[in-house]
Image (cartoon, rainbow, N blue to C red; front, side, top):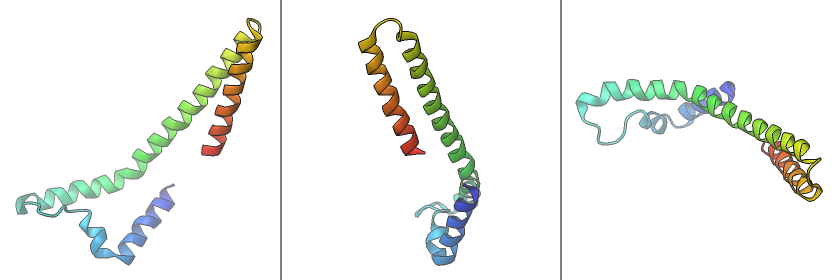
Length: 103
């Protein structure tokens, strides 16, 4: 993910340097705030891949946890009631298909 992000940033700077630099400083910024805002926006740009990686990891973990919990519920209910087991199993299959499609 980092090479893709770095490539996008580099291509953005190469093709439209003025537009890329405009993201570091909002229009109408007071002069005394300019150095601080440029530093903050630069740090924000450099931290972005890590923040996106954390979000991706959380989403993948949540998806796997959900599939595991529903699978466990299916096994636990398989001895109780056949119609509800079929409904839960169908939901599990659909969630598995969704998880594979998203990946």
